[in-house]
Length: 120
Image (cartoon, rainbow, N blue to C red; front, side, top):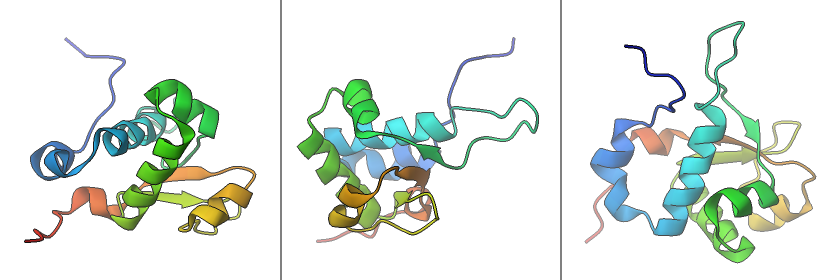
């Protein structure tokens, strides 16, 4: 039986990051995963690497306030779990850069696939 209409989620999220993420961070990260890896190009069969996700899409899909979403995005970018860029590919690592961008494209970052260092 082939399972359709599913989105792959990296095991590292469950195995190493789940306990370290806030609920807001997890919700935002899951939206980025869904909007990228959750879509397959029917011609190439490849998963989307980037997607334009608006603030209103994040609010609708997560049920969070804009402030909570912005804070979660800041943290996920600093942990290198997501990447945010404008339409030219310029990295939007700072919140003030994202506020002035017309469209923000999100992708999964390398930090999602690495184990975070233990801070004691």
